[in-house]
Amino acid sequence: MIGLDIGTTQVRAAEVQYGSGGPSAHARPRLVRVGVVQLPPGAVREGEVVERTTVGSAIKRLWAENKFGSKDVILGVGNQRVVVRELDLPAMPMAQVRSSLPFQVQNLIPVAVDDAILDYLPVEVRSGEGGEVMHGLLVAATKDTVLANTAAVETAGLRPVVVDLSAFALSRAMARGEALNHTVAIVDVGARVTTVAVVARGVPRMVRMLPSGGQDVTEVVAGALGIPLDQAEVAKRTIGVGYSQAPETERAAEQVMTVVSALVEAVRNTMVFYNSTHPGATVEHLLLTGGGSQLPGLGQYLSTATRLPVSPGQPFSNLDGAAAGSRFVEQQHTLAIALGLAMGVAA
Image (cartoon, one colour):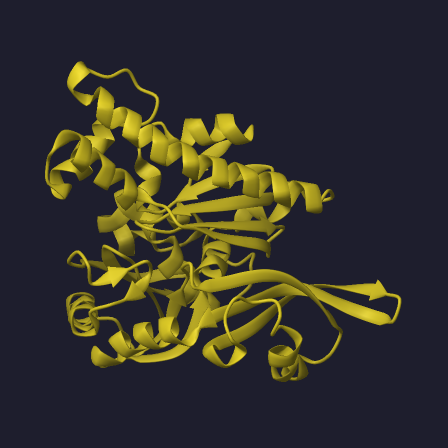
């Protein structure tokens, strides 16, 4: 099985294996192969495939170039059309949970139940007045989003056998090793969507999808400097966040700060809300992943705003066989979702 992450600017895939001890959160899976192919602008918007044939061709090229050993894939989804809510339900077998979800959640999600694909991740069981109660995360994805992405995969001649939430994949890839003993928040800054996943001792406890990312920074730099987007992508990494500027880049730096400040404030508010509602498992550390996480100064700014230590996410450190991904060491922060998707299937 291979994890496939369809991003705004790239498609990424990763294949992992577990040893004879079998899969677990404490095991170190082995990286077998990993690959990345660029996408043209506009093929994917807001985390949803718009140009199925274009994306399908990119995925087909990804398989041809990297010789993945299977056509079965687990596909990640995660954008503003995917809702994740904390939800308590009476304790019951998971088959009953899934069959009852349409009746339990029809007033909890912003779309009609018939237009959504529903699932539930139980986190813990508590004792309630009427018996045992399951506490967990409800996931509701619009069917259009899931079907658009699976159609692109099928166009490439592959079989999407499982669709998983990208935030859960981030949790698997990053909340390993020492992080299993703590509560961490993974902040994955994509091109258009920033995913925040709070994970307590290896268990996802809260997920937020924020409608902002690295592409928003690129666009304001392009507008302020009057340059093409590809040049703005380079320029923003020189401008960064909170650095002194030459007169000709001051306006661009102000625009960058406006975009980044709104994003950081949304992350900070997420931490405040989580900590206030989970006093026994407050966030201790932030891990930054995603292509947009490489903006100079972002980590320091986020640390100052949240008053928490921030580290760059390095998912290869949780794997054996990292030599298989030696070409991608410098961009491993973009591969956390693909790796976590593969780990979930293997598990």
